[in-house]
Amino acid sequence: MTAQQGVALIEVLVTLVILLFGLLGLAGVSSRANVAEMEAYQRIKALQLVQDMADRLNANRKVASCYSNGATGLQLSATSTTVPACTAGNVQQQTQAAADLTAWKDLISGQAETQSGAKLGAMIGAIGCVTLDDAANNIYLIAVSWQGLAKTAAPTLADGSTAFPCGSGAYGDEKLHRVVTTKVRIGALS
Image 1 (cartoon, rainbow, N blue to C red):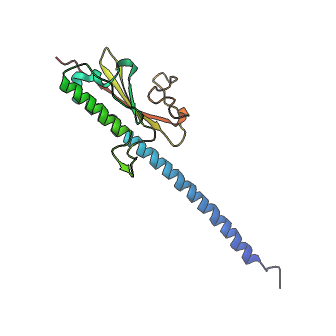
Image 2: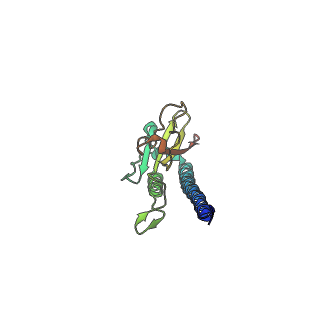
Image 3: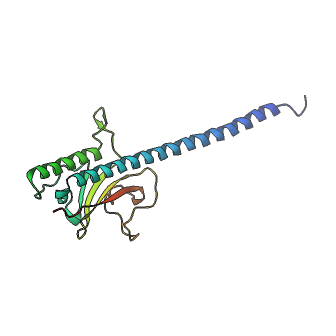
């Protein structure tokens, strides 16, 4: 017997170690892909909810004030119990505004899709906000915030330093706070 004994076994062990590192890398890539897919799903769902409220606000624009508490804004989430009462417009418009806000709250809390009684159809910790952003021009800011899975930059207002108010402080770490917005301008109807 020569010094060659056991070389084949060492080669097999080295091959197994290399294969193990490759499989661990593949598992890591798969895990990150799942996180990215969930983040994308949540963002798409939030964009749908923002557009849904913008459409509802535009459809009932004569009582747009019913959709917000003015500059302080309105926040709806799974823990919200009721929507605010409205005194603008006629009874039919008020009823429509209340129905719109209730339906939007239900969508935000995930009631559109359930499994075994659990609400699955929304983002993690979703909060919807409607604020009268510019009273002089009758511009409303509609925002949906949720909790992300991976830390990124915290959302801020246009000044770059003030935390975005919709959902601020609701997710433990502001770097997990996500938000999408749109503005709706309500024209002066006569």
